[in-house]
Image (cartoon, rainbow, N blue to C red; front, side, top):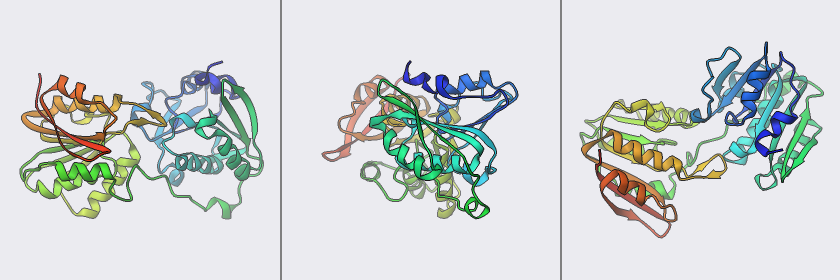
Length: 335
């Protein structure tokens, strides 16, 4: 029994259940539940729009934003909630998911959590015990477990009013070192039309917007939490020539062209390390950059993006950095 199928083989579903999937839309369980629920509903509370399945228009699938779901959800409205630790960026996101489950599950409702020991499943089990008063290990297979907690008593009205803060996006409270080095190296012209791919909290895009006062700045991110954080930062800045859009890479702006593209790309998807996201950003930047435009990327030194850059740009050089990070500039996108 493979880890990816543990929830499929373990979760008990009635055909009319309401199932809440907590930031785990990429789990194969979603397809299983979609097929199983004839008169029920699968609510995909998801942050990463790239994780959403292609059949989100189906009548029994409802995608919603994960980061503020607890603010808009109805108490005791779901029969089942599921969470896969593999797709969570940090423990804060997991604990927020547990709070959502405690809020929305009906009496007798069940929360299923799956994950490996090295992803913190044992620690999360302790939190489930504290929050729900019970936790049971249903399956142990190849280092992975499925834990289950039941709602035995619906929270009182006073408890329902306690709303816990949603998790924050990467580096939204302060400027991280890599982004600082990128801002020091980047050349911004006053008339630049610029794009910040994977904008996170919006530091790069807003920095560019303050300098490109006669241009336009677009920020994009696949994370709805990041988009919301950046939108708030834009409103706080008072700048009117900058916008933020939810987007899978450049998808939302692929017909536009830019003088400047910048990125501090993530190298994790959930808890898994990957170079695929940055490589997609590089190819996307080459597609939307004007012939005389500039592309800047900051990355940890151990991440080898130079080959992909040289496959998409005529000129690539390091223009900043330190012992931990490198800032790379690429010019003359190849057709």
